[in-house]
Amino acid sequence: MSNRLYRSALAALLGAETVLFAWNAWRFDWLRGYDASANDLYADFVARENALPSETESGVWHTPPLWFALVGGLRRLAEAAGWEPVQRPGQLLAALAGIALCVVVLLLARELWPSRHALQLVALVTIAASPALVRASAMYHPETLAAALGTGGLLVAVRTLH
Image 1: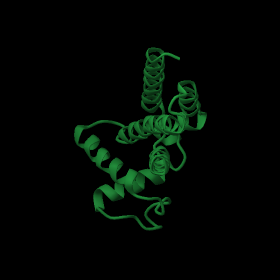
Image 2 (image 1 turned 30 degrees about the vertical axis):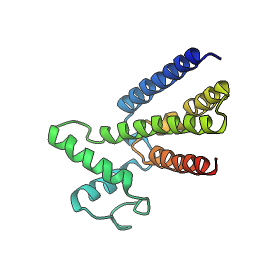
Image 3 (image 1 turned 90 degrees about the vertical axis):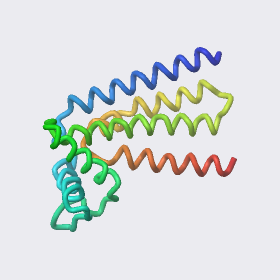
Image 4 (image 1 turned 60 degrees about the vertical axis):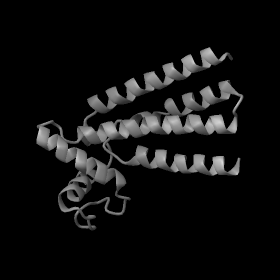
């Protein structure tokens, strides 16, 4: 596969995935994702109290706080701007994290198979077309950010071993 064709295929796949994830996040009702209300309580609590919630304040209190802190800040900005629903930026953050996961998987494939462009594209298509990722990237949920960070850790480990 020529470098030009490879780069064109990468650009097309990542571009299409970005459009799909952004459109899904924009159109998907934030309450239709699992744990949506509990996630919203957690993000709102972190943004307003600058503290972590307890068991009585959120049903997902045991989840690591990074996504909730980011979404809580975005929620406050959305409230100040009068943007409704104020949870939409959290969905867009999940979509962005889904794209980041696709890029990290691509980088991992490039690390594992540096001269095998076709395998790199297969890895990208496999993650990008995963129904679980497409759905999670539209939800008001920290799942995609956790997956992107975890896969990023795997990439660091593989690069360290090479």
